[in-house]
Length: 161
Image (cartoon, rainbow, N blue to C red):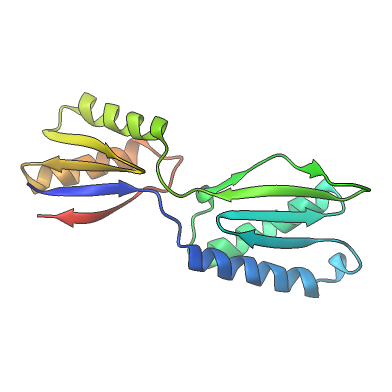
């Protein structure tokens, strides 16, 4: 039975390269000289450091620019509110989304059921497997998911015939 998986996966190698390039730019830019502006990557969490919220926004803009140049969709980023960390320093946590959460999985499943396309969607951990009798139905399901879920950069892999 033909099937495919709907997944939410960022290319972590490209994310690391973008963070490294952002760090290099912060170190060479004149407006960041003598400040505590920095960026750090641990697992799937990026931490931005700065002297003020304005500086954090500048570092985030540089990061978004570098990610875009490297072909990583910025919708993978989950930006949290900035926090004071002593003195006049602030930090901000940015998570890189990986894997479809339960609410989005159920939403995808509901859209497929409501569409009356002859396919079945099943939640498989952090992905959604869609299977059906015909390849055309699967392609219609892909188009439906792309149209309905626009706030997440979903991709499709593991297409089996």
